[in-house]
Length: 160
Length: 392
Ligand SMILES: Cc1ncc(COP(=O)(O)O)c(C=O)c1O
Image (tube, rainbow over all chains, first blue to last red; front, top):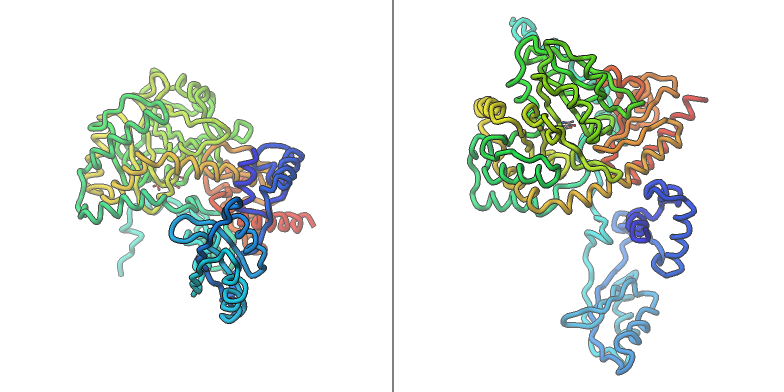
């Protein structure tokens, strides 16, 4: 049941317990208990709005930064990853396979903000060997949501 | 000046244009309408199926296929019907015809079986095409009223009462558009009991066969003892695989009937769209998981919307098939037409009046759940506001 709840909530975080209960054919109390447990377990970690700021002329600057690091002998990549995750400019952070170790997205109001972040905060870290910064020019899709389509339904309004 | 009303075929002139055409036109002109009115999936055709069609184009498959359809596809259809619904015994060379949607297959089956004056039994509420097609063949459509108390199933008694010496065919439209009603094995057995020993044919429209809920699988009347020889199954890819625009369906039935249908199809159509046929082969071979995933999504929406209507005080029996709910709106004090028109004007929500699917659909509305949960939620909220205003 936990998986079903997560599948539904991931798509529609606004669903109430009563609505989830109807959709899953279980009681509202059962849903409430499961959701509470999912939160306690740390499975449900929060929710955010996906926005396209471009449309109100308020774009932020986002960069995707590839980082190579030397892992600490015992802690592996975790220590440096936790350290980078602490920076509030960092929007996402992943350990990667392939040519580099960590992928970070960083957001700032200007190019300068992002450049300064790399130069002043990221590069000086002891374990960071090198960085490659790619500026994002335009978002097309984020977290499964298209950023530019009109969202219109190309089906008619009514059909029999 | 030519008086076209004197030229145009009398029967087609007498066929009522779908009674809600006007209402559709109003809806289409309005801005910001939120609709629960369409009978087609919101999902796009699964990617691998689209790719199979593209592949066939790239390979230059741009010609007619054989009249009955690509042999490989017919083979897959027969295997599919056995695998999914336990109907055995169709010979893919002689008992299967690939058509332009289920729609064409319905038209062919009726035209090839009905002589002028033959009566065709049509349980209602049901899909809108049966009556006009029967009428065009000179047949006499005989509606059978089904009721919400029986979850809109056709019962043996209702069937028996409608049969006359002129009865040629029974149309069996389950899982049902618009009610979402289904017929289980035991219900089909009741129908079979009445038909055994007669020459009455069955046209079983099983286009929603993949869409059944609550752990109930679709049962085909062709698998019921004694029914195989009298059943023409019509189905297609539109609903199960979200392929409405590909225009592909099929008929399965006794070789004599399929041969007649193929003859007519050959003259009227030549062959069904070639690239759609290649897509359909892929759908049948590798599409089970897609169907399962879409079904799961529909099921969550179905429960959501049934619960929603019941909470609004519009009694809604639990539909176990297709992707429609059919709530009763009599408590609003309005007719189906009034309800839909007022709802459209005042809240900009489009649903279909139940009487569009037969007189006995009066007092109901058809609501499709081929929409996202957030869309359905907003529409339900507006319907709730509308009902409050009706009371107030
Ligand atoms: C009950 C029923 N039969 C047949 C059809 C025709 O489907 P198609 O011609 O797309 O296969 C529909 C479409 O709405 C339907 O609802």
